[in-house]
Amino acid sequence: MVKQIIEDNIMIAKFDNPPTYSMTFESLQIIRDAVKKVNEDPSLKGLIFTGEGKFFCSGFDLPTFLSFKNKEDVLRFFNVEEEMLYEIFTCTKPVVAAINGHCTAGGFIVAMGCDYRIATDNPKAKMGMTETKIGLSLTIAEMELVRYGCNDYKTLRNILYDGERHSFEAAKEMGIIDQIVPEAELIETAKKRICYWWDQPGHAFTNLKYCLKYPIASQIRYRLDNENWQDSLAATLTNAQIRGVLEMVYKAMTGGK
Image (cartoon, rainbow, N blue to C red; front, side, top):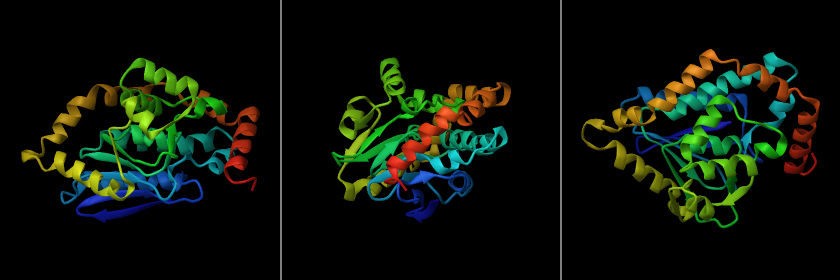
């Protein structure tokens, strides 16, 4: 579940699916709706993603993954997921990740698709791309958003291949986080960043963002429409060994429930 909240003419999409604040199929649809509203409503200045308590977002919902029985189930989820990521990346207004807590896997990808990333000064919170440790690769949109959000090849390589989680301070040193602030200032800082970019004369931000992101956005669009990325993804997520790992991870995350 994701809550849509409007404050100070800014849309806040708040992950709200305890205990781990994961993204369900419904979450994908709500996020797409939030982006659509931001694009179409002239009174809205931008979009903030944030979470609750210890979590920003732990990623895609593992029970949903474990419910996949066949290729059709997998594609029902991931066709929407890929469009959601593309729409976040190409939103015509500023999109800021206000990272309040743990930010991993799909949550990390959403954050990397944002224009700016602000995190709290919580020394216990971690972020990273943990897919490799559970036998998963990345889809087309996932890969390109993570690639775009990294400063250089070595940072991207280590994030993908190592599958480690990093403190926010370490992530800032890597260039993944733009700014670290006290938790009480997180949302207001995100709002200020959006207003600073959007309130410039003529809203030049929109065209500048289009020019900046067009090479990657057009590549994502072309590959999604023309490549057969679905077969390997479906084979992975219906593989018995991978499903066993996902079940183990889910039990660890929920205390064996």
